[in-house]
Image (cartoon, rainbow over all chains, first blue to last red; front, side):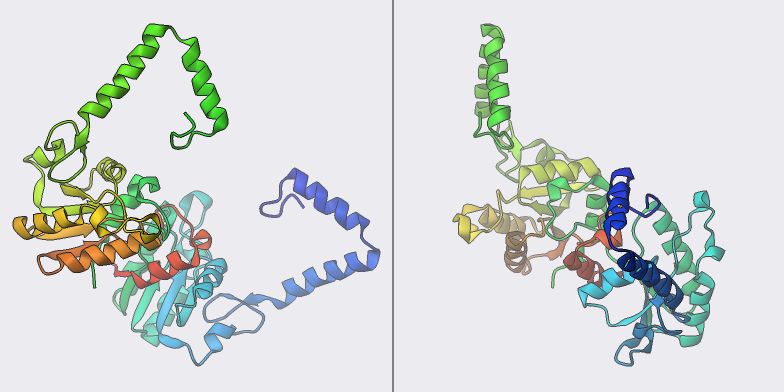
Amino acid sequence: MQRLPGVGPKTAQRLALHILKRPETEVEALAQALIEAKKQVGLCSVCFHLSSEPVCEICRNVNRDNNTICVVADSRDVIALEKTREFKGKYHVLGGVISPIDGIGPEQLTIQSLVRRVSQQQPQEVILAISPSVEGETTTLYVGQLLKPFTKVTRIAFGLPVGGDLEYADEVTLAKALEGRRELD
Amino acid sequence: MQRLPGVGPKTAQRLALHILKRPETEVEALAQALIEAKKQVGLCSVCFHLSSEPVCEICRNVNRDNNTICVVADSRDVIALEKTREFKGKYHVLGGVISPIDGIGPEQLTIQSLVRRVSQQQPQEVILAISPSVEGETTTLYVGQLLKPFTKVTRIAFGLPVGGDLEYADEVTLAKALEGRRELD
C-alpha cells in the first residue's frame, strides 16, 4: 500500500486495516476491478492518452478541431485541460518530460510519434502545454525545435495565477509576467 | 497590538509581554522611532510611492527609463517588482484598487494624477501590473480606457506560475494560460 503515490506509512496502515475488516466478497470485487482496469485501459494509438479503446474518445470526436494539437507531459494534464472546457482541439501525451538524471531521454517519450503525426497531419498550430520546471522547459524547447519546420508552434503563458497577489508571487514568475505583457484590448 | 496586520490575540500578547520586560530606555527608543518614521515617510509627489523626500529615489534616478511607467496598486508591489531587477522604468502607485463595496471609487485613488502625468509626459508605454482579482480587473480596465488616448497600454501576463504544475493550476488560470499563449522563438 505504501508504494501508492501520496500514501505514507499511517495511511497505508489505515487502508490495510480497513480492507481486512471488509467481507471477503467485497475485497475480491476490488481486486477484480483493479485487474480489469489494468487489462482494459491502454494508451490511445494516436495521442497516447489513457483509453479503453485503441483510439481514445477525444481523437475519435469529429466535433473537435484537428488543426490544433496540444502537447502535454501526462494524461493528468489532459484531464486538467479538459476541465477548463476552453480547448477544442486534439492532444498528444508525451508520457513525461526529458530528464537525464532519471534516465529519461527523448527516446523514452512519444516525441518521435508526435513529429511523425505533425508532419503527416499538418495541423495549423501545436500548443506546448508543459509545466514550467527545468525539465519541462528543456522538453518544450526540444520539441519546439523539432516541430517548427512543419507548423506554427506556441506555448502556454507564464505569469501571475488568477486570483494571485503580486506581492506573493516569486521573483521569477513576476519577471515572466512582466516579460510576457500584452497590449490591452 | 492586535490591530496590526497579521497579529492575532496570541501574538499580540507575546509582543506586549516582551515589550513590558525590556528596559524603559529601549521602549522609549522604539516609540520614538515609530513617531519619527511616521513623520518622515510620506508619499512621492510624482509616483505616490513611499518616500522620505518630496520626490522618491526611483523618480529621481536619471538612469531609469522615463518612457515606461508601471502602474501598481500598492507600494508593496513596487518593492516586489524592484526585487526582480527586471524593470528599469518608473512607477505609479494607485493606492489601492477600485472596490465599491469598500467605498473605494476612482476618486479615492491616484488615477487622476496618473492621467495628468501620462498626458503631459507622453511615455511610450504604460504597463498595468495589478493583481488579477475582480477589483484588480475592474481597475485595470478602467485605467486602461483612460490612458489609451495618450499611449500604448499593456498589462502583465497571467498564466502558470514558474515551477508550478499544470495539474495543480486552477481552471481559470489554465484557461488564461491557454488564451495567452505565444509563439515559441
